Image (cartoon, rainbow, N blue to C red; front, side, top):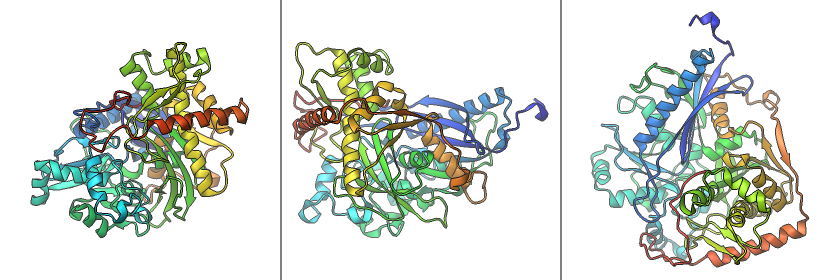
Length: 542
């Protein structure tokens, strides 16, 4: 094709969005923020034992190669010149833990996914080393409670249980990273000079990182007995980390030499993509789980109501770090997949909206999807899922409605906690993620929160945030993050349609159900002895 026949759109930015259930590569116009093309590949999740969730790091990397290749092909079919892609950003599922051999480039074990519960016994053992067995002992250093959720305990389990990893550490061959580190190292050369790094947002989810000094913390590494030499170098969220190297699976040689210059954990990327750059601005992302982040600016705010303190972003080496309060819910979109795959009451995930709309009520049925215990604001690993309030009248439509309500009630708990910690209630909620396509869910969310819910017309805010960070990096400079230069976003708005008294009544019943979900299992999470009334799940994503 002659260059003169190609669409001239100015500089473009690519974005790798590596999530729990799928990988995508998206390309945006740096001047208009328009999404030009994308490709998506689903990722297999493995459940070798009760509570265990794993993924193959090589499959994840291969999915990135495939998505890049297919997206570039689609752009060429649209007569768009792929040589205009000037930078690439990376957004990733956080906490998921990979250890690999730097001499061979091979993973030494499957990635342990953030939802995985195998480390509860490790957590219990570590708690015994802490005065008063205080889960929040490291909160003011890390922003996090001691939990199966974060990378340090997953890494500790790998060092304790996988002989190949013990050997590689002893030989100086092992590298640790979250998914961003694995991808950036592999894409910038791998065993042939790949860059071993992470950004501050991903580092802040490991429990090994001091969120004030912005460095790996020697005392935390000593507590978890993690050798510091296997950790990646911590960089800002917006700088050139390295250049894409040619890969055999990229037949066209597409993007070789393009800088990888943005890196954000997925929830931080969504905060940036929603342009929540001011103190007090917040967004809620509905994916596998549900994640409500509120920007607290350059001040780290510590919650008294079960929220995490995390790094929101650091958009340049010389730029200030900004913090966020975060409410994390383990199961949101995953509950819909559970209804489809485990109960078989849906043929497709989209069908839940139709079933719920047909009845418009749960008819007193409440669903607490505590499949991986309860995250914020409870941090209760012993909880398990329950459905209660059933009568002979209850049918699959009511259960579908109750499942959607559960997502909304969990968000209400997060919002209440953020309002208490910040002191200034949010007057609307910005939302994104796959589930926001469900209009019944969005209306329910507004009804239960008693405030408007605002959804951007371009829902790919996570990928957009990573692209913005990449395009704005020093040495790239094709995307302005100045407030006056940011593109205005068109939105769909959902207003509350029920009275606050009804909302409060339903929320109080939900809280009663939550109390009944607790204390179902002991810390021996790996055993299959689970109470008959505790529901089980092999975690999936929306």
